Length: 296
Image (cartoon, rainbow, N blue to C red; front, side, top):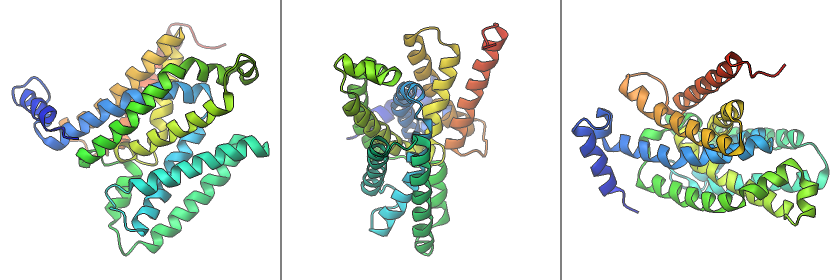
């Protein structure tokens, strides 16, 4: 997929002062487009992650991506985008965790902790084996994101993940919520709770993996949780909860990419995105307290 026309239009607007001057550079336009694609999707899915109490799960998938990258490099995939191993390993990780959670009766936190520890040990061992074959900066990009190196291929992957994720989740949103609040009642009403559970696990996994290059494996789970948490603090309705979460996630993504460049700040894009999301959360919490709506 070619983004040349859109990129040229944005650069033209930037050169005429309509948009920030940094957008005259093609790599900055790519970064902006990636934020516009993934920010709203992560914000919308984050409402379900918070409602279903799957924050630890999304964080574990993000960390598992480190092992996926190591496997990809080991088998000869390009280190700039080892998507085959990334998606393959993380999907296997997520589906196995969900399967054993349903079969063993262990608490989700316990099971995820076990798998996360094993995954990090495996990834760390593989990266030590590969230490002589890779540049340390490659590791930094995986851990903390490298949104300024996003290319057309990465944007295509983001679209290929984001569009189906939204198309699947939006029509099923109410059923997913029902299955989260009261699985037994949802089952009685004909909701396929287990099937939806597996579907949601797959959607969260592929969206998380696709976002690793932008936000980084260490931080990607945070962008699913923090904007949604801020939105829940302020929202008085379900529609408001979703709308605010999408808005906060999009704002954090865009500002986290543009502000470090515009202000010449030595902050990685992934870190900047999460820091801004954190500021939004604390502003929301303080606003609620100031309005006297805090919990007793």
